[in-house]
Length: 153
Image (cartoon, rainbow, N blue to C red; front, side):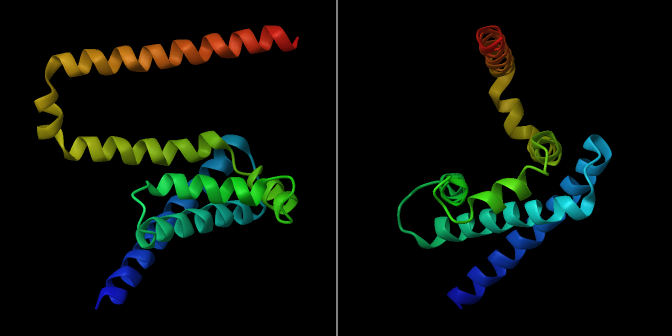
C-alpha cells in the first residue's frame, strides 16, 4: 500500500512538472524566441532533476527540503569535472530563467490567493514587513549588480 501511495505521488509530481515545463517552453518561445525543439531537452533535464530530488527528499530519512536535493543533483551534473556537464549546461542554457519564474510565481500567487484567511491573520504589520523585505531584497540586489557592473567595466 505504501509503495502505491509513493508511486502515485511521483506520477503526480511528474505530471505537474511536465505541465509546468510545457508552459515554460511556450514562454521561452514567446518571450525569448528560443525554438521549442531546442528548449525541450533542457526542460526535460530540469524536470527529471526535480523529480529525482523530490523522490530523494521522500525516501532519505534526513529532514532536508527537496530543494536542497534538487540543487545538489543539478550542481553535481553541471560541475565541469562531471561527464554530463557539457550536455547539461548546453541544453539548460536554452531555457531562460525568467521563463521559469513566470509560472512559478503564478502558482505562488494562486496558492496565496487560496489561503486569504491565513493571509488576513498576518495583519497589516505583516504586509508592511513583507513590503520592506521585498524592497530591501530588490534594492540590495540592484546595488550589488551595479557595483559588480562598475567593477567589471
